[in-house]
Image 1: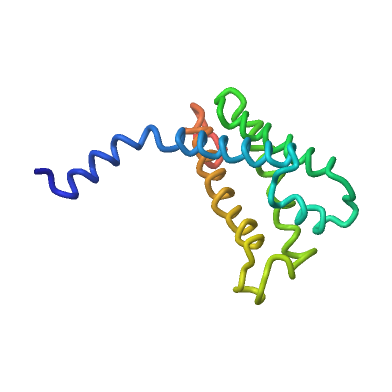
Image 2: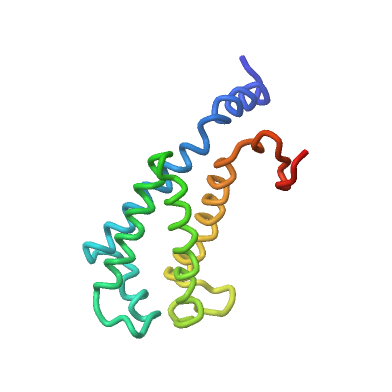
Amino acid sequence: MMDYLETERKLSYYFKGRSVSLLRYAMGIIFFWYGALKVSGDSPVDELVMQALPWVENHLFVSLIGIWEMAIGLFLFFKRFLRYGLILLFLHFPGTFLPLFTKPEACFTWIPFGLTLEGQYIFKNLILISAGLVILSTLHNRPRKGNSPSGQSE
């Protein structure tokens, strides 16, 4: 029977080349799904978005955010479009934190520690940002020939 460390080593080697792809696909599914819910009007955060942005009076803006999120999801699925997906992803995130400042009463029961369900939904974006950074870190696996990582010639 294999011991724990041997099993861990084998799993580590197995997932080394697969984990970032799995992360991309998982994020792609999440973003496409969340976006589709916004477009269809079935997202539980529609009301929060409209409350956080008082100039938004109808579902159209929420639908546009949903289309944006669906595009992120699709782009994350295809390596050829990955760079575009990451650009959209990182442009998207600042807006996701707006309700913390525009509607804190909807996000906190006790500032800064008591999070409502909506607040938890917003703070989970820290994980998605980190996942995006992991994916971004794989775009360029090694420096281009003749260049050091700092961008200066060797």
